[in-house]
Image 1: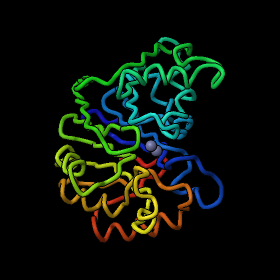
Image 2: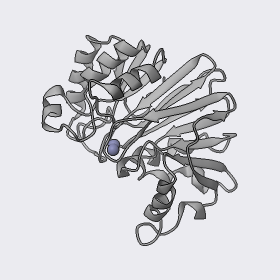
Image 3: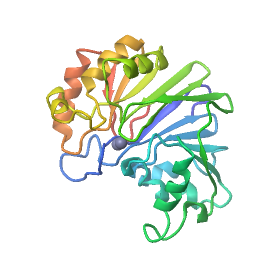
Image 4: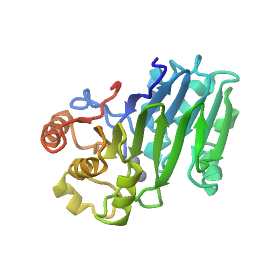
Length: 267
Ligand SMILES: [Zn+2]
Ligand SMILES: [Zn+2]
C-alpha cells in the first residue's frame, strides 16, 4: 500500500446493471465500485455490485479507517453494499456517506425486510450512515463535492491527498453549459478524472436526458480541466470487451492519457 499518494483500484466499472459471460472478461461486469487507498485508510467510491469482489475486504482488517462515498441512490451504485466483507468484521469502523439527509432513511429501507433480511447496521462492523459534510478531512485526505447532473441528483467527489488528486464524476450528463463549467473548475489540475462514458455519440442522441455522457465529451472536459489522466467508467451493459476496446483506441487519439476502467485496474 502506498503511503503518500492516493492509489485507485477498480472493482466495478459497468453501468446500470451487472453483466457476465463471454465478452465481458476484460472490463468486467460488476457495477460502480472503486477503492482509494492512502496510508492505512480506504475510501470506497460507490458500492455497486463490484463490491462483491472479495478483494474489497482484503484491506479492511488492516484499514485504520474506511468510508464509502455514495454518489446517488440508483441501485447500480448501492447493490453491493451488503456483500462488503468489511461489514462482517466485528468492531471495524465504517461510515457510509450519502448526499442528502433524506436518503439515510431510504438506504436503511432498501436494506431491510422484506427487501433484504437485515439492516446494514445489524452487521458486525461498527457502521454509521451519515450525510456527507461540505469537507471531510480523513487523516490529511480532503474530500469535497459538487452537484453533478443526473436524474434525481448525484454528487461529484474530489479527493486531495498530499500531491495527488482524484475526481469521480460518474452518472453525469454533459450540458455544454453551467454544469460542465462547474465540473471543469472542480476537476482543475486533478491527477485522475473518472468520467461517465456510457454512450457513443450516436447512442447519446437516442438517450438524451437519461443522465449519462460519452467518452468523447469526457476527453473534451479532461482537456479543458487540464487533468493528467482520464478514466472512463460506467460502460453500458451491451458494450462488450471488443466494443469498449475499440472506443478506447479512438479516445486515446483525442486525449492520449486515457484508459477505460477494468476490474483489477490499479493506478
Ligand atoms: Zn449508474
Ligand atoms: Zn444513476
